[in-house]
Amino acid sequence: MPKSLGEHEEMIAGLPFMLPLDKSVNEHVVDVFAVVSERTLFERETLLFLEGDNVTDYGYILLSGEVAVKKKDGAEIIVSAPAVLGEMKQFSLPGMRTATVAVTKEAEALLFTWDTLYAALGERLDESEVSAFREGLKKYAWQHFFGDDI
Image 1: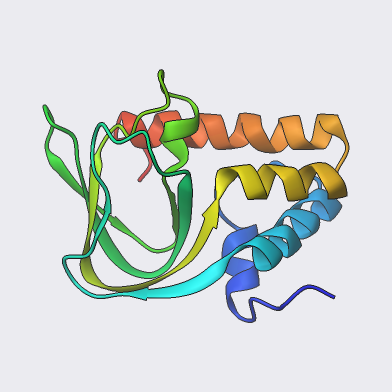
Image 2: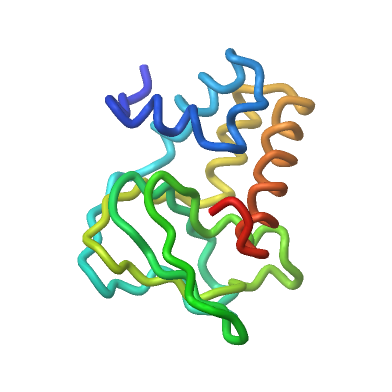
């Protein structure tokens, strides 16, 4: 039986890229996040990502707090919970971090690796359901990248 995310399950199920998924798929994805993620607390000024990094495969679901997202040639954007962080690396070439992300207010997040997440999703969902998840996440990532709907 997967560990519970408690009050955060509804928050994760309601993330923009999760809403278009069928209800049962949405529930399976939330369960997978519970299994593959580790709840982590971050102090102010903790650096999560450095623009240009291509070493780490981490992703986060920001449960509380705020982060600053700064692109080399762009304005700083403040992102508040709930939000997914680190998703853009999967869709950028050659898999590099597209922004520096640092905690601005003490934060709690679910930490996971994308490889582990997709492996677990592949065990629970069929290929078309994983594809629907990935396409929704890709749309969300590009909206983040261009600063829309954050």
